[in-house]
Image (cartoon, rainbow, N blue to C red; front, side, top):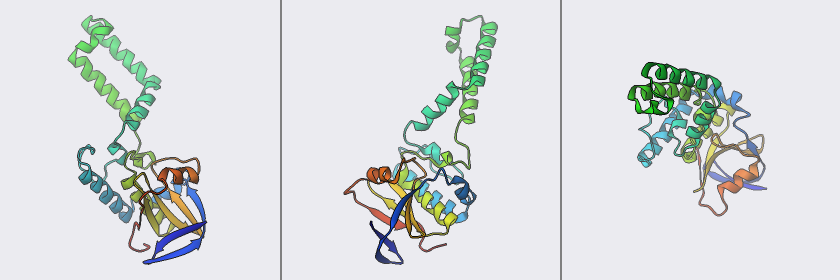
Length: 223
């Protein structure tokens, strides 16, 4: 298989093997480099670019230390977290206790509790507690799963694998999707922190055939 790689300002055509680099399976290897200064700089610049380019989609302007998952532009995380809350027995126990307390205190039937502003505030605090409990945690791969933002978050992926594996990593972008790519031991790898893929061909197909390609190094030189 022929792969064109841009390295050291030259185009070199080489025959290589291509493989998927599963970020989830290799997270323990990548994790120590999450707070690397250069990796964080790439993350911050990419997320600021997203906020500037799409101010109506960003919840707020990015600040260092923010959680990329909270910038997701679709309902993936809301649905995933709400599903976990719905399955949390402790949440339901506290919810029932809250209802029992307010029925006893107000004499209202359960169906009418929502008419009470103070009750709704108490329920909101309870829900917020469990929403936080089931939200992605800092340092996990999920923390960086910025769904709807592959063009920005996978710049971070390229920086992360570059530092963790001591390789020159590239950002491979089409109009459909973006991933990171790098060469190690004469194998071209493709990495995506955002989505899980069954195999490399699934990712390549998703990138799209005949798409306009943007291919550039995440760092000017190997760091």
